[in-house]
Image 1 (cartoon, rainbow, N blue to C red):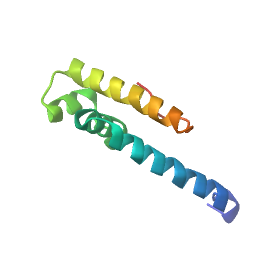
Image 2 (cartoon, rainbow, N blue to C red):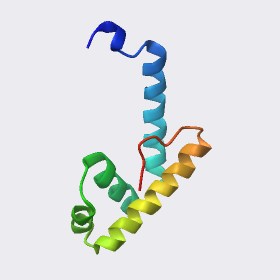
Image 3 (cartoon, rainbow, N blue to C red):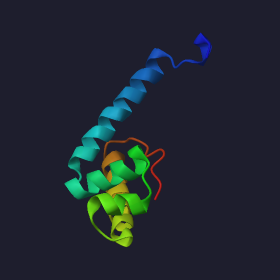
Length: 88
């Protein structure tokens, strides 16, 4: 990567703000929703793995992740942050 490929200070600051808003939004979720969405979208676990960790059926894990993503979208929209990369 050459210097011109690196983000400039404005872009770096914008990404840092997005991360702070995302962390704040995650803190607003219930513990089970926060854990479910982090395991699925940050750690990269399958729904079956999330279900195993959470001690619930796969369908419940899918529902928890879906609800958590929906809540995050609402929270981030309220904070005017795009929900890039959060898919169901």
